[in-house]
Amino acid sequence: MSIPATLLERFCQTAARAGAEVVRCVSTSAATDYLVRHAGGTILVPDFADARRLALVGRLQDRGGKVVCGDLFRTTATAAAGVSCANFGLADTGTLVLEASAQDVQLTCTLPERHFVLLHPTKILPDHMAATPLLRRLHSRQSPDFIAFITGPSRTADTKRMLPAAPRGPRELHILLLETLSDDFLHS
Image (tube, rainbow, N blue to C red):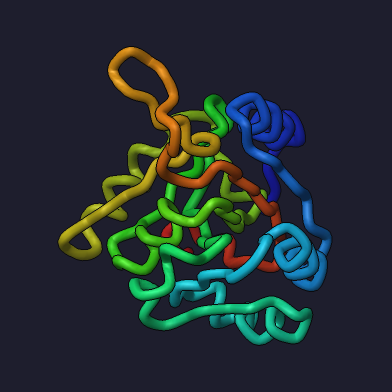
C-alpha cells in the first residue's frame, strides 16, 4: 500500500512547521543509528509490538545506546529520550496519533527532553475526518483508553501565553518515517 506523494509531503511540511524534525529512514538500521546519535543519553523504550518485532532494544544497545525498558517509572525523570510508535499521522496538522493507555507509553511521550516517534509512511491520513473510524476502533479495544495527539514539541505556556522557566514535556520531537514498521493502523 502506498500513499500519494503529495500527502506524505504535506505531512512532512506541517509537522516541520509545528517544530518537529521529520526524518525518512531507509532501514531499521538507519533509524536506530539516528536514535543513538540524537538521543543525548538514556533512551526509554516501552513495550510495544513494533519494538519487539524489530528487536529495537537490542539494536539500540548494539549501537552503544543506553536503553531502559520494562518499568520506566523509576528512570523517566533522568532519561534523555523516549521512543514510541504512532498508530497514524494527520497530514493537515502534522499530528501523530497513538494509543497510549499503558503508563510506560504515556511517560515516554511526555517527560523526556526528546521524543522519537516511529511512523510507517502509509499510515498518514489527510485529516481528522479520515481518522474518525480508526479512532472509534481504538476506543473500542480496551479500557481505560488514552489516545495521545502529538503536534510538535512541548509548548507549555501559562494563561498569559508566556513560557515558564522550565516547560514540561519534550523540547524536541523527531518523527522517523520507517517502512519496516507494521502498516496496520491499529498496530503500534
